[in-house]
Length: 216
Image 1 (tube, rainbow, N blue to C red):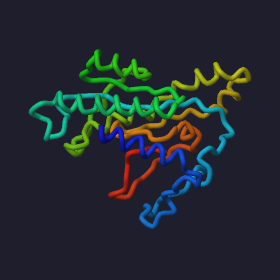
Image 2: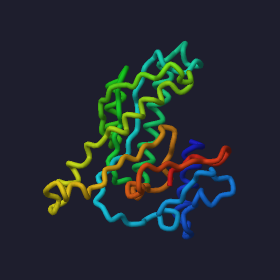
Image 3: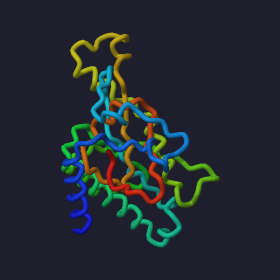
Image 4: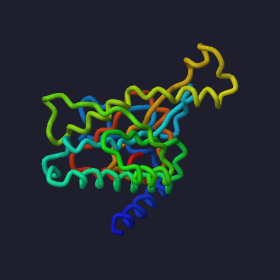
């Protein structure tokens, strides 16, 4: 309940904001390699290409790869990620997200849980898990599954179908295919559909200690 109240307050503040969006590259604590994007001045900056995009989340689970703290009851680690996704999808509804939301699933699956996520508007996408390299940290071994996002190029067909003029190879080349990859422990406090227009690859880096409850 406390988290819901904080979310509501934060969303209200963002809705009332009339100034330009925060540019992390302008912060004195920004990463030395931080480069501003076209959204630093206008979060609704238009793209010259048609966009075929989706928000991508991950629920790929291998009990043998859970963090040391969860090894006694690996199912708790799955339940944590599932509930995080429920909260994230609920927040996406509240901010009227129009981009399709895809949850990549694999490994040990809970079909009942996946049906709940589908009811919240997500589409399940079965994928093959990624085996982490031997040098991977025991805390982040399941993070390697997210590399599958680099191969998600299946959104071009849907974009062409929606574009009457999209015929032939030359026209298809003008379609920008994009995935907006979000960690499960995020909450959307504002609509982020415009991120599909940002030139990829792109990422947001947050200085240690800053609030990370919203993706903007």
